[in-house]
Amino acid sequence: MKKSVSVVIPTLNERENVQPVLERTLSALQSVNVQVEVVIADGGSNDGTVDIVREWESGHPVRLVQCVGGGGLAGDVIFAARTCSSDVIVVMDADLSHPPEVLPDLIQAVLIENYDMAIGARYVPGGSTP
Figure 1 (tube, rainbow, N blue to C red):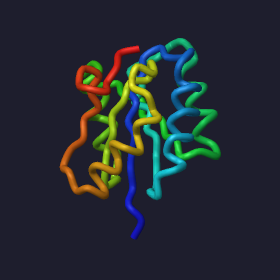
Figure 2 (cartoon, rainbow, N blue to C red):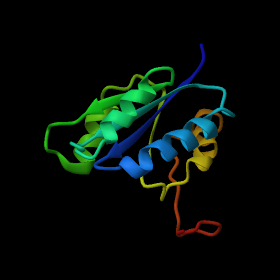
Figure 3 (cartoon, one colour):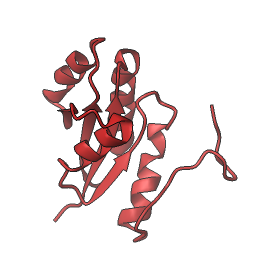
Figure 4 (cartoon, rainbow, N blue to C red):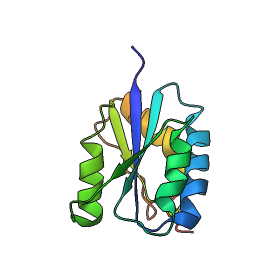
């Protein structure tokens, strides 16, 4: 059976970033031999973010989870993660401060190298903060 990965991306008024983050995330994940879903965990956007995500839901492995529990960023991530049934869950920011192009390396560390967790870090040798 093919392994699966869910990428949870919390959003709150990310209209300017949601399209590029979806494009770059799905592009980066094409090289990974896993079933993929991108879950947008929206915390109550009122700037059109939800409309853009709804357009992506048709024809792409993208799903919107509207988080209305008032749990803030962490609560939204947990709420959305509970809707996932994937083998691996990755959490990344919508503002592109986490480059989607590193997703294959993180996923490989867990699925192929059998680590329990992989964390991308900006402050280690080879890391950067753009």
